Image (cartoon, rainbow, N blue to C red; front, top):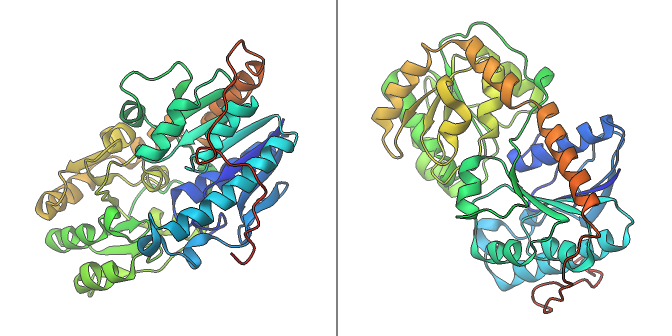
Length: 377
């Protein structure tokens, strides 16, 4: 198939990845190319498509560089920038001759272009619902527009009664990129974007209480949070190890004895958890969102904002079998299983393009499809 793989544009889609959504998009593009598909990655211009895929810049550079989300979220200037960008992207995919579009953008225009133009599409919802996007997903329902969430928990958050076009496709990883090691060194690791919703400070507090060495890995996305809430807990056996590329992070995971996974929001999945589990790490986790659904018996759990309980969970997690953590990922969360699921939905969306379904037009604020003149905007 000729596939347009659309991503969000807050961060570049390139290694080392800022977070799970960037990793998901890049590795999905790589896997689809390996299966013989012609893939165009629609992302910021400072992204890097994997070998064999083409990059179509939606904007010259990711928006967080000029309009940091923590400062500009919800503002007219950022909303106008995103609307211009995705108006151009919608124009491109509508005219680009693609067989199917895989939408990972979280922008309201994109699902509606599928509905309005009978463009076969799979929209993957990687975050809990917010009202603007919920409206777009509701009014873009069509047989050729299929929707996925990455967990059953999130499917129920998006819809009390899901439409027949909504499915669950779990995230997957390339198992060879995350090699299993049979034993650890007694330390713990934490990995992710360092921002309040990720609970980095709780990981540091709990490790100190438990007396377990901890290394934090990831980009410092929210500098004030790091300086005020995280940095005071660093020192001695609790340290910040920087932002590592995939192979280096896999080695760091493999050396450790447990992962700390500390979401303070309605976690949709937890990609870092399955990456660490593939390397053999049991998980000490805050029980939020889909965390228990993903980690299962390979984790020990604590409630939010309870570092003492999380410290106990660390010690419990270190007693759990490493081989079972790897086996859970192999059985449920391989990239092969994920791509199998997506390919089946691509074919279903393409087959339904001519379904007997009423046409629909949208107001300009709901869907705009003029080419985006945003270079230097």
